[in-house]
Length: 516
Image 1 (cartoon, rainbow, N blue to C red):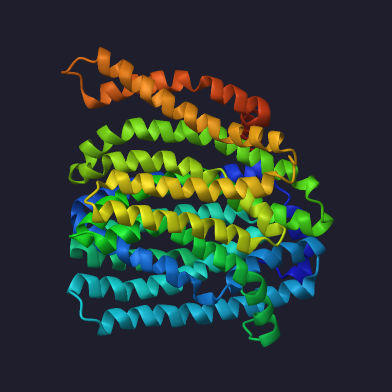
Image 2 (spheres, one colour):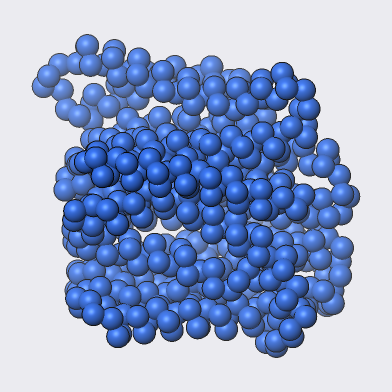
């Protein structure tokens, strides 16, 4: 990648992609990753069983907390680099990329080494020891991976990011499965480590991003100072997303086995959350850069309201489809995980509640309200901890823990929506109307699921297969959701934008073929 000083204007021109087009590109990459990752997960889950998966997920849970070892510097880069690009301040860009990259890499090595030593010196069984040691290497390399993602996102290099997602997915598919076949969970972790190395090597040679490695205390302090609030938000997000899993892994009678089962339900919500996450990945630098350039909240209204309404439209449909298809899918491909079906269905609906405040949270971050966003998430996590603990101690099912998680998601999301949307709808009546509009499709989805279930149950032949029953119910559900899609498209013109992006991509493809 050329340096900012040499090619600042050129690189700024390259990053002026359509927001919808860039989001579609990242979504396509994300869902390729999800589709192949789903197949990989199924194969690995069958190879290593619930207990082995529990060990892998436990190491993954540790990763999510240890990734904060950079003390917020990575998030400082994420926030300050787009605004410096917006101001076209080449000197600040060099400082942010050079010093920031050095500090992030240094802390990544330290955190990864600590996790490696924990596995090396700890009194664990061999699978857990090897998993922790490999996890230390994965942690360090993934921090470098995250650094590339942050820098390349700021410069609008979404083709490289999308391609990296595809390469990472293929590498994980091959090496994790081979490792699981060879050495069970230990081999799966070693395969994961190798795939991370391959992805970072691709980033290095495709982007040509190689800043001058140097440490300067004022720049590090500046990045930590502006990034620490965002780090706090990410930490709070981690708490919100993992509070139910932590409770299950701590308080269950057979922690690794039960957590292995419940983690499959958590993964469903993660897959569905990829839809708004891909949009948020593109939206965040646009909102930050736009606010830095004009200091105008009203000018960002479209970037906040359209993604929120799009999530309210699309996510209930996707979650409802998952709700219907999960039972036959789990019974067919991973029958050992059948006890988690209802929990997975509930968390699929909970993903809608996670999606709604994505754009609102980004606006609050742009306005310097990071600790408010973090507080909302921590409050939601605290609710989950309390409710999930009560359920586990009383011998509740995994589904009741999932309901506790959805309650926390709802509270955290509602608070963020209120604080963001009140800037555009100051009247209490207007604000309430918008909140109802945001949540009504989910309520409609729940009713549609209930009615489609009642109709298919009363009309089904007892000999009809699960898949045929699910297909009929799915058709009824989609028909019932048509009014939601029509209304959402009327408010956002989402399908028009997607059609325009698809048409543009097809036109470029035809032009390239014509030149050949």
